[in-house]
Amino acid sequence: MTKYVIRRLLMVPVILMGVTMLIFGVLQFLSPAERSALYVRDIPKNERALEGIIRRYGLDKPIYVQYWRWLVGQRDPVTGEIVGGILRGDLGYSRTSSQPVADLIKHRFPATLELALWSIIPIIGGGVWLGVIAAVNHNKWIDQVARVFSIVGYSFPTFVFGLLVLMIFYAHLQWFPPGRISDWANQVINSPEFKNYTQLITIDALLNLRFDVFLDAMRHLLLPVITLAYLSWALLLRVTRSSMLESLRQDYITTARSKGLREREVIRRHALPNALIPVATIGGLTVVGLLNGVVITETVFNYPGIGSAAARAALQLDVVTILAFTLFNGFILVLANLVVDILYAYIDPRVRLE
Image (tube, rainbow, N blue to C red):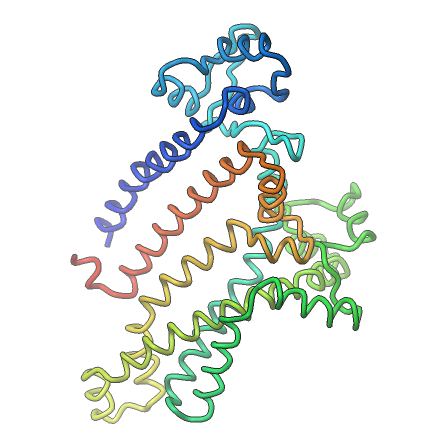
């Protein structure tokens, strides 16, 4: 197991370098004026100033020199300060949010992380549970209801379902408002008495013993979580059901039943572990999608996460910000794949032997 994990860890830097080379290659399609946003806040307004920026930051140097400077930064010949360098956390300047992209991600990511944390448990738990129930009751009415549920959910566009629940539970019933938090609660969390330990409002509210703030944050999270869960359950249900049905037809399941094991033990100890490998793949990709910012859901519910920021940057053609988000998303994807690979080895020992 240790050798398997080490092999996977050694591959991470290679994959990350490939991701950075791909992103840098896309950057080369931008004009020097647009690429100057990697180093300066104000894009040059005239040709003479542009030529000065190009010479100052070496935007006319060979591509491998520019790539290295993009990675580690370079010393400004005028100020003497080191500027740029994604390895230093400098991803350029966001024109749409008027701040460095790194600060934008730092400001927005806690909201996306909080939404992902509260969504992942009902998504994975609910999807696997529904799939197992459908497979165990194959061709019975429970299975038929689950299949209809998954088909309807899988064919439902995210923005339609989001607008539907928003219309019912906010516009009509006034129960669950959009956004991340109410104005009165926002004043509380910005007061000196409130300590922001994690930047996650629900967690910080519990640590500060402000249960009223916690309940308000949960009211705002409920509809996005339901939207993400319902649409993800459909896919997880179908994958888990198919995988469980295949496991239940194997000879070792017949052998386990012939030994007199209770059906619950057969499912829990023999069928379910072998059916979880494709579920782990879908679950890993679902987590990546949640952490990368669910663009449509955050936009529909006016939720201030990474997804809504990326949508705004895309609408205004802020290419530097979009590519920085792409690099950030690629980093999360590589780490998530590493976790899924390790999970494979934990679930199925044959993977380690290979």
